Image (tube, protein in one colour):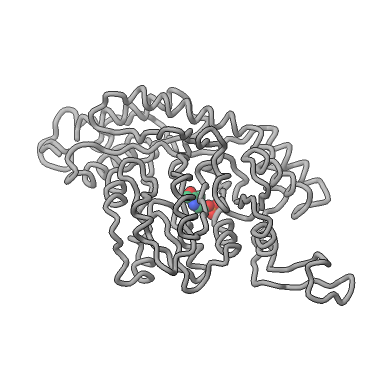
Length: 412
Ligand SMILES: *Cc1c(COP(=O)(O)O)cnc(C)c1O
């Protein structure tokens, strides 16, 4: 950074205009980085369910599961209370437990690896591409040991990871392919809907995701065996179907066959989800338009690099990540400055993500392996900023973000 950085003596006229330094912000009101879009139809769907006989595990759950399974093109969908519960259920169904390892990316929300830890398994962090934050397959291969049970891919920012490459590694090494597709409902991989290509994929319906149910999640699979396990895990491990019981003492009889949880989604949430599914294509199309606008308006800008969409992938643009440019030795400092300056301009940005292994909990858990060799993740983390991205953003909002970025870029 140059000596006219606002945190150093001698403000330039440009840096003096930054809201960070008391100048007028680009926007008067805060622009959040993500926001849900709820229609009157969504409200009506929830109210209708509220007045029905079922508030939980009624017909709305099956309808929602069917709507998502049909859209993605998978045989089974199991709705649960959150994306985190979906991950936990997937690890359970895959029989991942103590002494097992899963290989995953550190550039994700902590839940991806946390849920494996719930099962007593050990997460092993592979590196990512410093250009796009997607898991690096060469690094995955290097982390495979006799204890490895699964590779967990992440569709970072809504861009599908290399499904074919991961599937190939899993096939060769007899591993399970689990996909954290919390970002990518509505994305496409080689012309087909994303989230269908793994042994199990999980979704999240948190308000910032492609569609929302308030809180909620889902597991998608083509496997009948996984499906059965997911169903009983969601409801305490209890089996009620007569043909599945080990003994049957009468019509009241059921068995708790596994240690499950109450991970049920309620019908109000499912009704909202089914209604939101009707807008999914429109939401993703709008997110893609916003991404195009960002790319056009930032084209040629010397200070920022927009993460590219790879060949054969159509991102659902859960996020729009940019990377600061310049001297790599200054990435972290430049990113911090841009982040703080954007917040002062009333632009809500986020950093996605702090590499999971850096958290104190993981340092403790992983012991001397706490700092895995992940130079790509370190670099990506040091440069990344997620710009505001949601379906109801206007072109004016995009212009404000771009104006703020350019204003701040001049002071880098
Ligand atoms: C949101 C998210 C989750 C967790 O989903 P919740 O519904 O919030 O529990 C898991 N993984 C990733 C990558 C996410 O973005």
